[in-house]
Image (cartoon, rainbow, N blue to C red; front, side, top):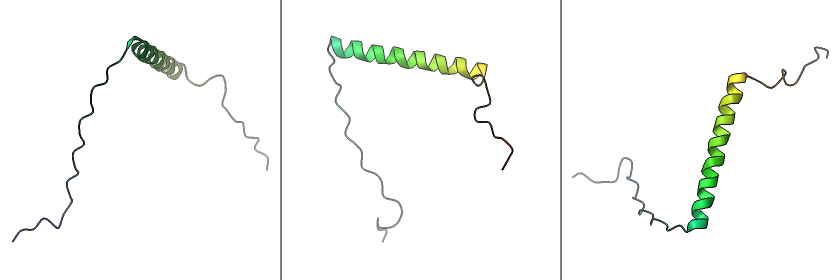
Length: 64
């Protein structure tokens, strides 16, 4: 007497994506993009170590 009406339904599996074939131009672009992302990560890490850039940001005047 067990029916599969109640409870959470299982999601359908997605078909696996086909592996793409890249030519040399595509590989060069991907490598350049990875290098840029790596450089940005390094810069972010350096910026976090140093703290904020030269100030407290927006200053509030205390007067209303």
